[in-house]
Amino acid sequence: MAPKQLPAVLLAACATLLALAAPLLAGDPDMLQDFCVADYKSLNGPLRLNGFPCKRPENVTADDFFSSALALPGNTGNPVGSAVTAANVEKLPGLNTMGVSMSRVDYAAWGVNPPHTHPRATEIIYVLEGSLDVGFVTTAGKLFARTVCKGELFVFPRGLVHYQKNNGGAPAAAISAFNSQLPGTQSLALALFAASPPVPTDVLARALQIDGGLVEAIKSKFPPK
Ligand code: GLV
Ligand code: MN
Image (cartoon, rainbow, N blue to C red; front, side):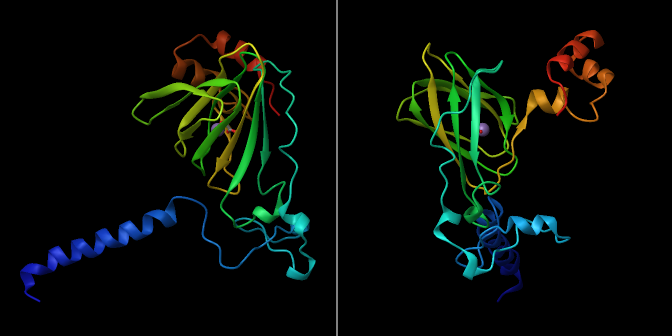
C-alpha cells in the first residue's frame, strides 16, 4: 500500500469501528447466555455487580418471566395527578440482562407526569386511553412537543428531560417501553428540592435567580424520602 493511502485507510477503519461500537454503547450490555434470571437473594450477600447475579438454571420457572404489575391502574390521587408503575428488573427477575423494561402511566383528568429523565434508556410511549400533550427538551434547549392520541406513539430520546400531560377531563393511560432493564428515573423537582442531604438553598437561589425564601417554600412541598 502506498504511504499516501494510509491515512484514508486508517480513517475508514476508525469510522467502521465507531459505527460498530455505537450500537453496543446505546443501551444495556448484550446478553452472554439465553437468560440470567435475577437472584434477588444475592443482595443479602457481599457480591455487588452491574445487574444481578443469575439464579441457578434448575431453579428458574416460567413465573420468573411473568408479571401482572401493569394490569391495574396506579393511584393518581396525588398532587401531580399521575402514577407510574414500573415493570423493571427490580420487580421482574427474568428481565435481568435482557436490556428492556416497561412501565404503565395513569393520569387523572388534566394530570401531569412531571419533567424527568431516564439516564440509561430511550423511552417509547404508547397511549392506551385518552390523549396526552408530551414533550422533550434537547441539550440545545429546544422543546419538541405535540399531542399524542389513543393508539399513537412518541419517543423520548435517552437522557433528555421529558413530560406528559393529560389534555382531557377524563382519566388517561399509557404504556412505556425502555431499552434498559433499569432505565432509572430522575425527577427534576425531586433532584433539586428533595435531595438528601439537601442541595444548599443558596445554590438553588442563585441558579434559579430566585429568593432563598422561595427555595425553602418549594423545598417544603417535597419532603426528602
Ligand atoms: C413516562 O415518561 C415514564 O417514564 O414512564
Ligand atoms: Mn419517562
